[in-house]
Amino acid sequence: MSAESVPLQVSAEIMRDIPGGEIVLRDEGTRTDWKVEVGAFRLAPYPVTRELYHAVGGEAAGSPAGPRTPVTDISWNEAVRFCNLFSRETGLQPCYATGDDPDGLDVVCDWQADGYRLPSEAEWEYACRAGTSGDRYGDLDEIAWHRGNSGGEVHDVATRTPNAWGLHDMIGNVWEWCWDLYDPTVYGPYRVFRGGGGFDPPRGCRASCRRKSHPTFRIDDLGFRLARTG
Image 1 (cartoon, rainbow, N blue to C red):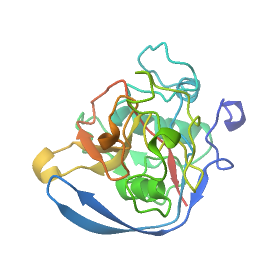
Image 2: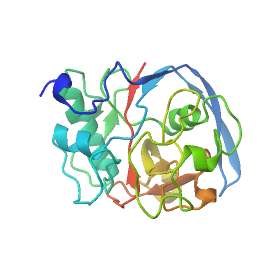
Image 3: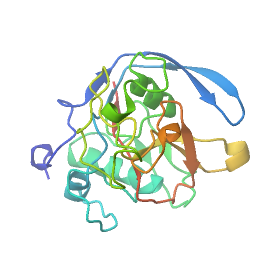
Image 4: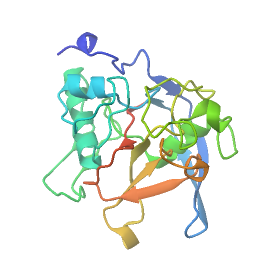
């Protein structure tokens, strides 16, 4: 399959260039802050859709949701495998070396590879904020599908107002897996996901809101977005 044959492809031409900078992350449970330097990178303007996921060869749980909705019920392990598959299909160097550990602790990321990968947690929040500092980058109803306006459904991507860097659905619609371990000393292999979903109240739909689960976890409001090293 060529890159040109993939519907709704997330190619270099449409991925957004995110400039380098820094972000202060916060864990509200432990009330700790930490500063992270973020290098320039590229991020897809919306989450991976069902159409793209199936076109590249991924298998996801059946759903009545349309082809332009974010693919959901995808584990962290499956998202990593998709990144490698899509990289190979489009002639790029895969970022991940993988093994058989269901905990995903044997997955290694080559951050210099030019293929597709999950964003780091710092990259995700930095891109979500797009230079803003509040809870969100705009009015919640305008930028996000959330419990108050989604009707209990996941909606087509890019149907809400994007942030200043042209990124849609960073808040609401579906949560998005990130690369990072949440806190390995306490939660072992649990990975971070961000952004809030269409079933969440406003408190869950904030740029700083962090959640976590095992890398085999799947649920109907959790997907992922593609990144590339800049």
